[in-house]
Figure 1 (spheres, rainbow, N blue to C red):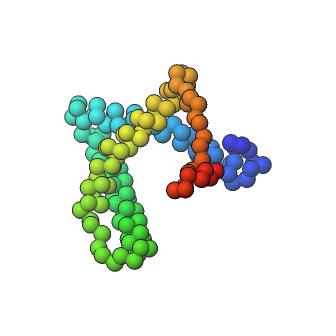
Figure 2: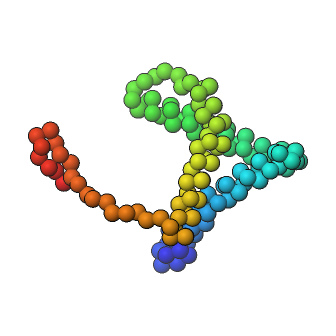
Figure 3: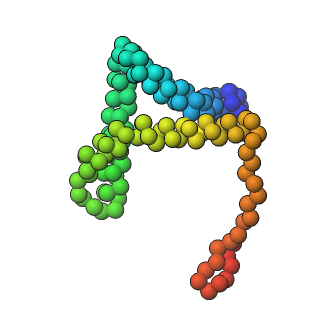
Length: 137
């Protein structure tokens, strides 16, 4: 389907982007590693533009976070103010904590898949049992 015009916009535009996007864990970890190397070496000529991009990403993440908190509180009928400090701290810390953890997990998954070392195993499917002990599927 990737790049095939028979599948319209999905095949021509979206699937090629998603195919490239599967490499995000690799270039995300590589970028973080290079950032650390430049930081340790004191190469601030490279770090200044990177800091600008990271700052712009944090500002955008903060904007979306506050918007989602506002929409959620409006949806549940709560009209209180969103905590700006907590939202700012979450937006500041997330690229250096959760994103690195997510990229590491995805890269580990790729490694396991490509080397064939991991298996899913067998999962036994069961239905739900209600309070009366009657099984539902």
